[in-house]
Length: 190
Image (tube, rainbow, N blue to C red; front, top):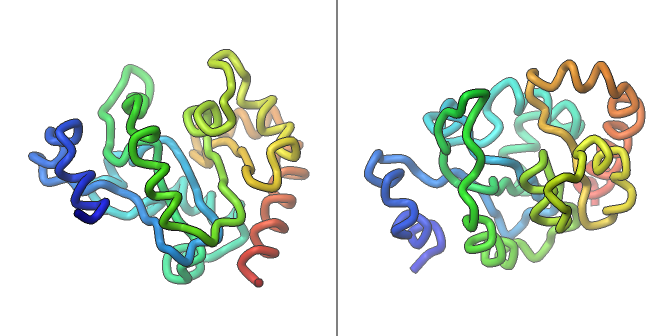
């Protein structure tokens, strides 16, 4: 069974399958850069394309690539910590379901043998992949991004909701984004 069909058929995903929702991810064998974020928004779930929103526009700007490179080149893979929109919480969306990444990510990663960089967006992916304690401050992780290179590059979520965080942490725009753009350019120009 193909992994996509296996995800759809997984009993844990039946409520989403019954709604007619598709698991949202892309894992081309040619991918050199993988982006791992939280979970699709409802808008993305409906569009069935990750990062096809204001956050995606900002992410592509941070990466230094346009939509054509991001979606059509085969250089980028995108795997969220959960393949489906998890629903609304009091403030924002619910957290991704526990166990989904542990169950499915290893097989998806094996299907991308050319990966040279994994960009970890936000707390859920960073805590999972970097094996960080729950109390770890994401600001500290992002500020120490060089510690996790060359395999991982942790960044904050590009949501406009993070404008206040960015204003309080100007080093992100002056130091981290240029370093990210340089690394991405080195990889995709090979």
